[in-house]
Length: 360
Ligand code: NAD
Image (cartoon, rainbow, N blue to C red; front, side, top):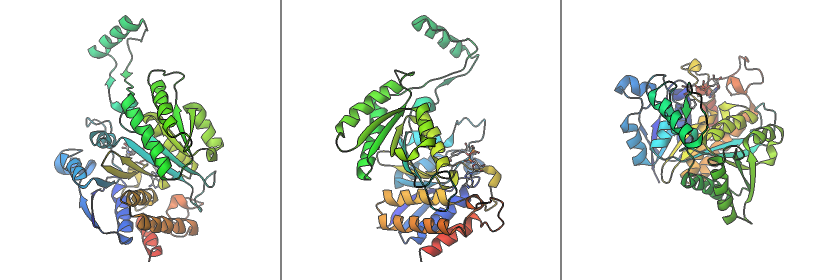
């Protein structure tokens, strides 16, 4: 079956890594018609808009997109174009596997964690009150009136909404993912001891959902600060982690660090019937146009996309080719060399060529 997929090349290193990923995906033999659309810096220059409606419409039409990283220029009215895409398409689940590959220098071997991050609410809702503005001052006064709690008048305020609905939706996603992917345990990560009405609600809902999976999937709870320490000491004790948005963002970078860095950390943003696949890393502007960035995270995001499309054989072949190229250590980018200054490191496109060659 031919798939029609939206491709957002991205900016900074985005174009280089997404082009490499597209070439590798095409080389699996899966038939894909790519629909190229712009978002980010290039879109701003060509259309005057950072996130044109055409990009969102294309994703809605095709249901699946591969997206390169995008820079959010300061002062454009967007906190983050990436967050805006996830929120406007209701891509509520952010799936970020963190898996060790032989040949990548890192502190640990054999890590196989999956981070499931809630993508739609929490402190990323963008509901903020700037210090000194009349509405901020009146909010502070109202809070004092209602709760007798004092907030300094020269404060900025960010709102942290966590709902029953979104918590249940994400925890259920994590348990279903665990079941479908033969995982054993889901750990709910929170700070419910301090934020009783937000993280506390998240945890309470997680316990309810977990009870439906009793006997099939083990459920565990962990406070986020302790979890951070446990992960750097004993990452093998964990399996699937489910977290509210902010902790999910931070812990997924921590887990990328456990497996050797952002260059090999893929991701997916999944909604009810739409999905956008992208690397965890950003647009690393200092490497733009240098053919230097590691394409692996973007290619592995393509592997996740192929699995989502039920093209499992192609996904296995591509992942195996990536594994072999990394294990051989010859045709890899600078960040995967034991010495990052190694002059024998290859460029982004040459690493993709080596991966394509392995699939022949
Ligand atoms: P970043 O991930 O772009 O880069 C941080 C550092 O990680 C880089 O300087 C580089 O040393 C390394 N790195 C990242 N990707 C790499 C790769 N593929 N190969 C080798 N090394 C790599 O994070 P940042 O500097 O905080 O953000 C830069 C821009 O990217 C910002 O505008 C930010 O908003 C945006 N961003 C976009 C996304 C996204 O599109 N999903 C995600 C995060 C950040």
